[in-house]
Image (tube, rainbow, N blue to C red; front, side, top):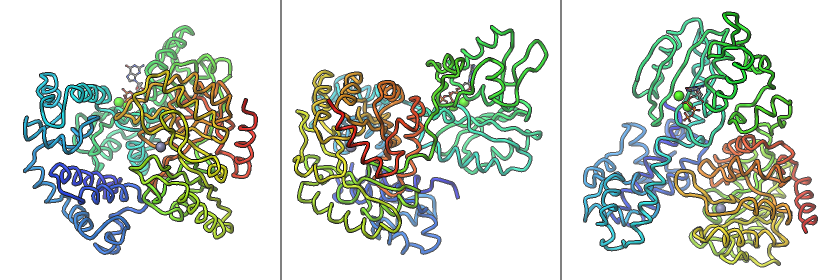
Amino acid sequence: MAVMHNQRIARLLNEMSEYLEVQDIPFKPQAYARAAGVIAGMTDEATDIYDQNGKKGLDGISGVGRGIAEKIEEFITTGRIKELEQMKKKFPVNVSELSAVQGVGPKKIAVLYKKLKIKNCADLERAVRHHTVAALPHFGKKSEEQILKGIEFLKKGKGRMLLGTVLPLAQDIEARLKKVPGIKQVIIAGSIRRRQETIGDIDIVATTAHPKRAMDAFISLPEVELIYSSGATKTMVRLSLGIDADLRVVSDDCYGAALQYFTGDKQHNIEVRKIAIKKGYKFSEYGLFKGKKLIAAKTEEEIYQKLGLAYMPPELRTASGEIEQARRNGLPDLIPYGSIRGDLQVQTNWTDGNASIEEMATAAIKAGLEYIAITDHTTSLAMTGGLDEKKLAKQAGEIDRLNRTLRTKKFRILKSAEVNIMKDGTLDISDAMLKKLDLVCVAAHSHFALSEEDQTKRIIQALKHPLVNILFHPTGRRIGRREPYALDMGKIIRAAKQYGVCLEANASPDRLDLKDTHIRMAVEHGVKLVVDSDAHAPGHFDNLDLGVAQVRRGWGKRSDVFNTLPVEKLLVVLKKLKKSAK
Ligand code: DGT
Ligand code: CA
Ligand code: CA
Ligand code: ZN
């Protein structure tokens, strides 16, 4: 069975939800959306559950009712959901494409189809440019402008997928190719190896004395949907995930050269080639040569060394100063993967997460963590059922109870909250209550349209608060969906330093907020970071390494990230940092 099955099922359930909502059917859409979230966040495969316990097993997943369990069974056994296909026939609209446009929801999609026969983004763009949309009910001139902006934003990111979506599949393919007899080395190169936040295609480098065997194994992968071309050194295919993959095969002697070449990025490679030429070498994917004489090809290390450069981790290869530092042996010792000890942003079913505090703690222990902070939303974020002070106090009682039972496991649940920052920079929870928490985290979730000056002032106002320890997802972007709000990051970073606040490197695949350049700025200014998964489901702790990757891309060391510390130490340094605030 293909990998990422949970993701595929979740995508389908989401589609069900969207089509039901467009038809204005009550309640069902929410149930499907919720089930999709549950399935996407599960650590067990739904297909395994079905194999072991049938429909009953699926029905037993909390958040999945009997009707939806039936649909999942239908999909697992037949590969389709009839009802969805019927709805698509009746309503031949690309709902997921249209609803990706900021400001376009199911109700509007229904109107757009009924009145203007709009079926997809291209139709919508044409209509908006002809100003035929503004006159429709629920629309106006302003929403036309917003839609156009949204479409342009989507076009910019077209064809690229989130690292977090592609990486698990790429790693799985890598593992399967490694087992093919005759293949010596296999590695994912390109933007994935550099852990870039979005991915254009998957580049795989393999070494073998039997290229044909490797190519045959590659094109026989169950995920291969289409073969563009297949030759002795290069095969290009399309995968069912909706992304292309290339396999290049070289002999084992030039593994390092090929790997360096196909890892990129292009700009880094251009700079490296310039250095090679200056030294009188020729450099290609087959090696570093002086005339016809081979100088280095087997490993990346020896190629860089012959060029007078220290080895550069792939995450740094962006032609932004790494080559100068490598020449001086001045590259930072990057934070290692797997070095996060505790996750400081975890939501539960007290608000918009889909599991209990206990279930999240159990999953965190399984993921090898030593502590988590429970950071449910607060009262002014009504759509998530944000907690007021009474509920926060009640939650604290529950955490105390769980901590007593977890003591033997040396695991600790910290009391915290994702306190909502109001428009004027104040918080929606009283100081008296905040004082009872182990740490206080803040975030903005609304008023994204403020001017850069006002937004910066507003956030700094929150950082000034004497009890605030961490600013969550500082720029509010959602990759491919929402631009960051306007913010003077230089000022935010200086304020974080001044007021003893840590900045979050949020590891959620579509946030990755802060981004690499901001992290580098923070690190340069000595501002401390934390890496959080922003978990809303037990499976989300797996995302922590995406945040570590982002910190590595921002030249961050282990010592720059506070939650690499054991919990007692973490609490001490957070306090100390706050005390040092001016
Ligand atoms: P992507 O796929 O858009 O996410 O980004 P990359 O970096 O994976 O780019 P891709 O797939 O076009 O090429 C993979 C690597 O191969 C790239 O990072 C550097 C190398 N490469 C590709 N084309 C060229 C080229 O024309 N010149 C040089 N020096 N390197 C190239
Ligand atoms: Ca690529
Ligand atoms: Ca490529
Ligand atoms: Zn948030």
